Figure 1 (spheres, rainbow, N blue to C red):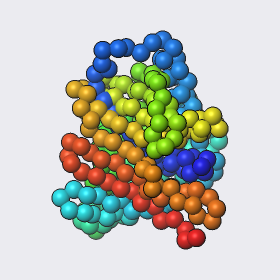
Figure 2 (figure 1 turned 90 degrees about the vertical axis):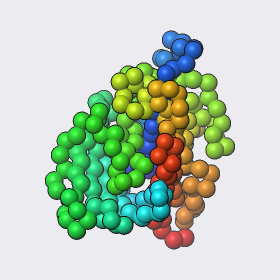
Figure 3 (figure 1 turned 135 degrees about the horizontal axis):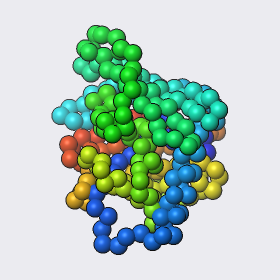
Amino acid sequence: MKHLLTVCAAAFVSIFLACGARGADAPSQDQIAEGQKLVQALRATRPEGNSEIRGTLIISHDGKKRVPVVCKVVVQGDTWQTFYDSKAGDGIPAERLIITHTVSAPNKYLYARAPSVDASVPEPKPIPAEQANIPFAHSDFWLTDLGTEFIFWPQQARLKGELRLGRDCYLLESINPTAPEIKRIKSFIDKESVEQGFAGILVAEGYDANSKLVKEFSLHGSSFKKVNGQWQLEKMTIDNKRLRSQTQLKFDLPKE
C-alpha cells in the first residue's frame, strides 16, 4: 500500500480540484491548525527513489481519444522533479511538463507544447502557478492538478473525517478565494498512510464560487492491482462536470 500511494502522490496524483464559498460555519482554530499539519505532511511526501511509469490518457469527450504518456521522477535530496511527457496521438500534439517540488517552497512549473502533431516539443519555459490551470494533453487533468497545487493554498482546515473507498480518511478543505475558476477542494486522505509517514489522496472534489461541483478525482475501488505480491496503481479517473468530460489515466503494469 505504501509503494502504491507514494507513486500516486509523487507521480501523478496530483490531482486535484477546488471550490468556492466556505459555507455558513467557519472552521475552528483547532481545525485550521490540524489542516496546516496535514498539508505539511502532504508537502513532505517524497518518492523513495527515481522511477518511471508509462500509461495512457483515455479522454472521453465527444468521442474517445488515447494519448500515450510517460512519467519520470528524479530525486535530488529534499528536491525532486516529476517529468510528464505526452506523445502525439489522436490529433493531439506532444507536450512536456516538468514540476520541481521542494518540502519548504511552492512548486515550480516548466511547460511546452508542440506547435503541431508532427512537430517536436520545444524547450519548456517557466509558467506561473496561477497560469497553470490549463489542460495537459487536452485531458481533464490540469497542470496544477498534476502538481497538487492546492496544498499551497492560503486556507487549510481538517474537518471531520469520513470513509471513502472503504478506507478511513481525513477530510481536508483547501480554499483559495483568488483562484480563477475552482476555489475550494475537499480531499479525502487515507489515515493509515499519514500515520506511516506518507500521504495518499484517494478522492478529491472541486467546487466553484457557487459551491457547485466542477471536477472530481477518484482512484475508485478497482484502481489497485496486485502484481508480483505488491499492490500497484492501475488507473485513476478525473471528471469535469462542467464540460461533461472524463479522463482516465491507465498505467502499463508488468504482467504477473
